[in-house]
Length: 251
Image (cartoon, rainbow, N blue to C red; front, side, top):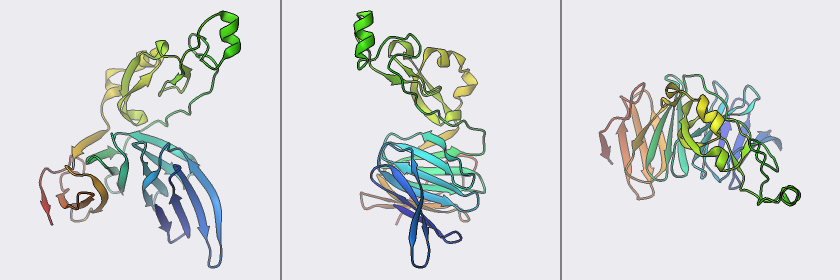
């Protein structure tokens, strides 16, 4: 999967490891500028917005990541709103919406015109950072305390390494990109208000496994191509600021 920026002669190449390589292409040479690491599965979709200098990537780990290339901030937003691998992306700058499509036919329309928070990096620890019980590889602490080691988990809101007992709660947290319920430590769960769970994306059914997608925002049309050899033309006139129109036609 590759995208190219004509103005800067930069190429973005996503591979099966989940890594995205940023290349500088000259007339007679090619050099690696940096690598972007954030996906846990193969990259299946890339979209480059040359105006804001944002790169959007979708992968088999069911997630979408927005990379702030222009701001040199690396990974900025992690969006989780699919149940299958993400295979198509398109950003609409006029309405500040992101459309993503997955292999199970899911179409998600993300509201990007809102304040969001970057998901934390997961922390490393040999014991639960809440109750201090050892994880199963911490042989010394298990021996000293005569206790069995526990399985390690991570709170998606704070990133701390925690045990299952200290992370028994689940919640959505759209401001951080979690449109589906994810694991949280009890302390973080108690800080979330009901308003914090208001969705920042809408979900729609394409009714076929979407392998490719493209859009013509000026005419309000979207075309999806599926692994079922079906092409669908969608009337997207209501998706801008609303939701995907129910009607479509086959070609």
